[in-house]
Length: 199
Image (cartoon, rainbow, N blue to C red):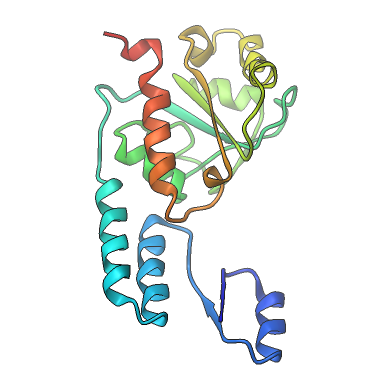
């Protein structure tokens, strides 16, 4: 039995031709992930365990609003030195859902695209109070400093002026799944470490 995601049509077709049972699960939203947990458990005749995991997932993602509501921008796998076309989390993404549960404002919630690519000028227009860089792998301290120093080159950028530039790293940051609870905790911790929340 193979578990696949939408968009893997070629692989799904190949598996099916080989007589391998393929279970396709949705994964775009946090609700999708919760449903997928139950669906997979059901196919494994482990409904009770699936319900326990799904319940824990929902509990760990309960809204935990921060003391204030800053505007936050999440970038996705940006390379240091590149502020020309920055991929950011927009509306309708699981990132947007996590920010909403934290009680903060997604800087690109009003975008027409779920994952827009934006310029430095476009970012400055949104005036984010915090910028969190999502990276698939842990960076060295030097690499992290290079990544974040890019933002200090933009005059009058609130996130840079307020020293709220952070990196959250790990492969769990890129795809919605059961480890979204970890990302949720790390986003909250990253924001709370900013001077705006001091004291």
